[in-house]
Length: 241
Image (cartoon, rainbow, N blue to C red):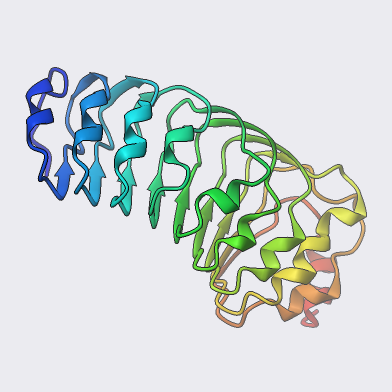
């Protein structure tokens, strides 16, 4: 609920050590996240999305060993992917539309093993997409659009059997070569996939799409490939021209 609360997060909150849920979303809070948040060792939900929180994420967050839902989206947070978040019990991680930067660790998937919903879009992440997300066995949503990611789209996404949404558009993925579409063949294993969006990248060299695209999930309701091939070629690939 929007209450238009202003000012900074009150330091007195640090004494409420038995809190299980804390939500300050959609207000006008400013300042930094308090290191005293680490005192809430019973906390399972922390939501401060849609405020004006700035700075980095304090290392004390690592003490929140019971937390399953962390929502920090739409603030002014700025740092590399917070090491304090690794190895928590998070199922839902949302840090979208901030100013996080730098590359994700190659072993990223091993460090957030319980995650089901991963929202990293609208930041300044660079480098390649880690090839370890398949180690996150329950992963359902991956949103990494509007970053500065490069390299290929990992074929290992095809091992994420519960994947329902994969949004990677508006990055710099691919090399304008025909091999850029190889990941589509592996995604045919993701039978629950409903949304796939990879437009506005550097995918494809103007050749045909792999015929395996016709074998994508029957549950797919949104497919956005961008200017990777002609409409005629696309329809022929699907066998409907």
